[in-house]
Image 1: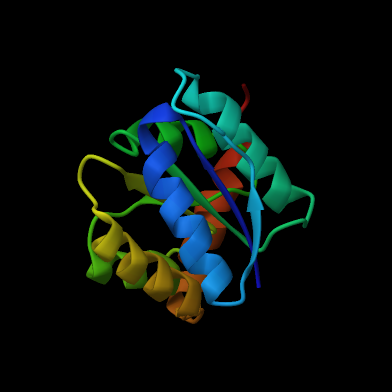
Image 2: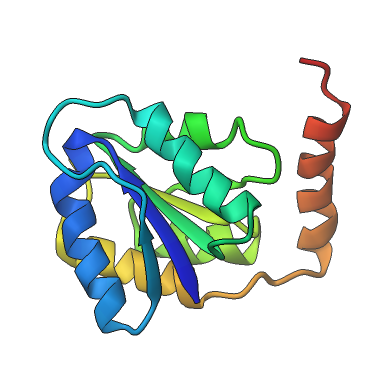
Length: 149
């Protein structure tokens, strides 16, 4: 499994911890930055993680900012991306089972490292249920095909 991970300055410390956690799980990690606590713009890192998925460099993405909201909004602007802001283990499972989410967004102010590990583990191990959910996900994906920008 290959995971691209990115954060802004507010998510930097949690990102570093998660990179180590993922590597300990023998997961191939692509750290897309940021690489310091210096102030940066979250859309830049959301874009790098989204492009890693779109180019099939990574299977999944993880994005972290202060609330997770900005990363989620930015990531969902990219065609083919289904980013979910998650702050509990139940939604980590459901966003994979029901929505086939390919990017997990976390808010560093709301999710500590212990909870983040649980959320990430569930997100990466939960398969998409398909069935009735496939039609719903396809309807969502058709929105970006049909929407004129």
